[in-house]
Length: 278
Image 1 (cartoon, helix red, strand yellow):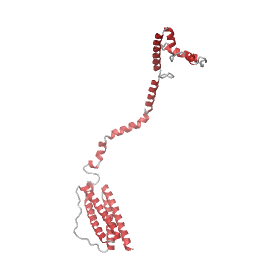
Image 2: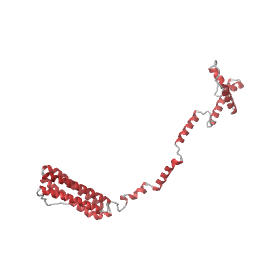
Image 3: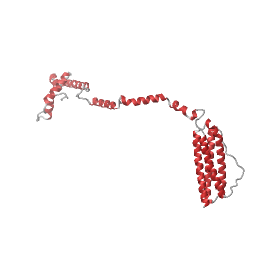
Image 4: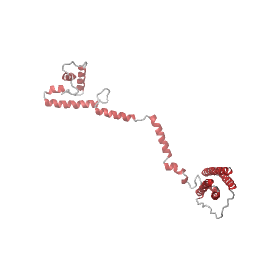
């Protein structure tokens, strides 16, 4: 049995006894023997010849193999050394870990972001005090909007009255106009409910719709349409004026939306009037 540090000429003669060794075989064998002897390793062939017995030769072979493994492990980190599979696996894992290591230049933005987040504090400390519900005086629909509470109540009352007028007109209108008038009455009721909701946000009190007992007399069809158009258009303009006069941003947006809806209803009444005049 030949070890890895044996004479390559013997291995070659056993494998191919009829062929000449490759060029440089002598130099390779001499280098292997010199390296093994320098580390205190006895070649297997020399151990067998010196001991002169199979049992002692086997022990020398084991010692030579152990010394060779130690030498290969110790020199695994040196350039040009023969590395075991375990050493190669360890080096491969170390190379993969090093590939994830970032340079100081790459870590600088991460460090800066971490410092900024630490300075901001916890989410409760950062955003808790800015929420409207965290303050006794909210930023929208709060104390500044109390002056417009009476305006909202007036708008709600006017819109409920407008709904009653349109419903009465729908009962006396031609068949082709009834559905449009019922839709317009629903828009008026929706605007009234939005005004009452805003009133509750500001004052914390529920604004109930008015109760009407008197009967509405509409009159002729064309004059009634004319009256409903002017009522819707004037209501839209009043919403615009209220939006310009309020300091509350949320209330301003609400008045703008109600004004746009009222202008849309006025345009629908005008289309009914156009058809009635043809």
